Image 1 (spheres, rainbow, N blue to C red):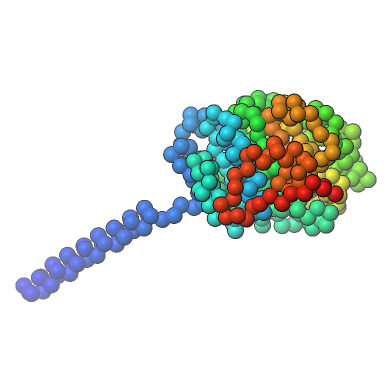
Image 2: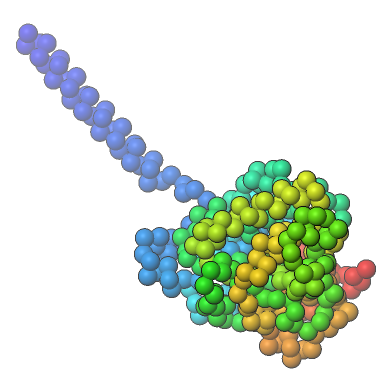
Length: 351
């Protein structure tokens, strides 16, 4: 019996030691486990503190592999012209996450506050069909603006920006725009700018021969807006089920072809024009000087471009591959790609 008790004590000690070792291993693994996708300096943006959230300017911007340098130029222009605390939600596809992180961490942008968010293109199944006119406009990231609630954003209000943009003003001024009661977003009307592009009305974006378009009751001469820059009220967006409304028109177009990129600037703009018609707050037009990539021969005056708070090269001619589109205003914010993938391939011939 004495021997048996000794054996039991030894076994008990060994069992206790084994449990301790297992607990230590588990704790060590938890402390060194890699966080999902990327919270850069998360201490600077406490998700539990509403006061800290209110002092942050959240900016959503997409990062595609082929245009990663454009995204970084936009980010650089923002942080170089603001005193605000800006937090970037950088949305990309799974295979571009590592490239995006390396671009940031190995350049002057390493100190920005950001989170990389993966966008799942599967949400677009049955909603977007092939379009041969401008296939580049079918990139999944072009539809991120429809799905803001899927990005797990804690802020009450956010700024969305396309990647072919340079911000010359104080970004907080854009963020501080007061949205009218019941409005989920603020855009700049195309009719508020000097005439530099012919596609400023709904006629250029929707096929008015279709019954579905006619039943909308939208005057074809009504002014449109460009959804490449907007401020969104997340509570109103969710309350009004904006994403569901946008998806409805995507599915409608999938069945009936009520719009296409052959009509105007792509397949992501028309659903926004339909859903937000007469239901948005107007931005100061200087906060969205656009069409710089559509009509290279139509030059704005130097003084006008200098006063602009935000420049947008929407259209096929981008400043990283065409000289004659005020490319100098974009190039000064370029952050060289440490991997050498993104380079300037310019031509002065836009035809």
